[in-house]
Length: 241
Image 1 (cartoon, rainbow, N blue to C red):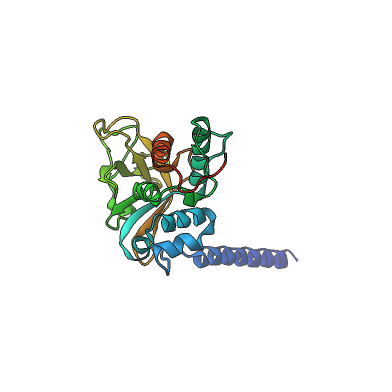
Image 2: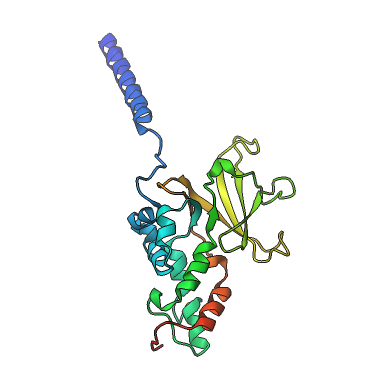
């Protein structure tokens, strides 16, 4: 009887080990390739990029996002919602309301040129994957500084790869991209607005997409700059507050 029990136990152990191995083997690797262009990718991922795809169209940039090769750091719909806001929240509509201006009801009220300007702040020439960027340590930038990049709108950001720690050893752990907007290029080391990348190296048929992690950032990283552009240009449709 004891022998039978031992045989059964051994069988269960081997069976569970096989199932465990099967789980690891069949899990496979995530496929970064997307069988469609960049605009189609944004449209297909309705959460979180449905509004971003809409803004691409409002900016008249469908052709670039459909065929041109470039690197796009994709902000999500929450960034747009936070930036537009309401009269009662700290966003564009609150600033417009208290400035005596009409508030935004639909995104097409904002000039296509403004949408284009702020989209271009996340667009960089060339197809750059994580492996193409240098190391950055935000706490030790004198040694690991990342690198400066001019976007399509000629504003400047720092992009680098952060190397995590593992088992108490520096820089051998998980690696992720860090995107840092620099408000004033005359002071390139000051007032960075840094955002981690949630997923990198997404490869549609044109260009590459790195999606930004959720943060408190506004579109273009400056709510007041966005407000000044809308305030100066005015809305394309007259609406009530």
